[in-house]
Amino acid sequence: MQTYIALLRGINVGGNNKIAMPELKKAFEDHGFTNVSTYINSGNVIFNSDFDEPTVQSACEALIEFEFGLKITVGIISAEELRDALAHAPNWWNNDPESKHNAIFVIPPMTAQEVFAIVGEIKIEYEKQVYHGKVIFWSAQIATFSHTRWTKMVHHESIRNVVTVRNANTALKLAALTGEIK
Image (cartoon, rainbow, N blue to C red; front, top):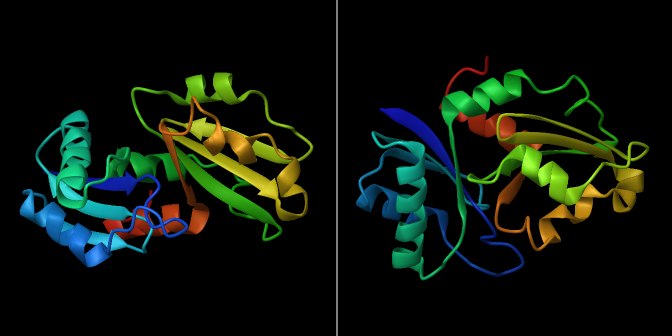
C-alpha cells in the first residue's frame, strides 16, 4: 500500500472549477481509495492505493471528470518521493521572509529538464531554482517578483497543464501530514 498525494491543477481558483473538499474526499473514497484526507481548498488529497502512479493518476482524473464534470490535470506524487525531494531542497528555499518560495510539481510524462528547456534560463538577479526529481524549488524576492521569468511559466502554453504549483508552506505541510520529513 502506497501513500500518494493528488495535486489537482486549477480548482477553486478565482471562482472557477469549484469543488468542495468534503465532496472531493467522498469521491476518492467512493472510488476505492483509502485513508483519504484533504488539505486546504486548493485541491490536495492524501490517500492510499495499491496501484502504481500512472494508474492512480488516470483514475483520479477520471473520477474528477465523472463526479464533478471537470477535465483537469492531476499531479500525483508519492509521500516518500515528496519527503525525499524536500530533504534535498536547497538551503535558500523557504528561508527568506522577503521572498516567495514555491514547489513546482512536474506532471509526467513531462520532466523537470523539459520544463527548464521550455521556460528558459532564470533571471539570476531576481530568482533562484533547482530541482530534485519532479519537484522544482523556486524562490524570488517579493519586491522584484514581477521581473522574474518563472513567474509567467504557468501561463506558457506548453507548460500550463504539466505543472502545478504549491507554496513552500503547503508542500511542507503535505509532507508532514504523510509522516516524518527526512
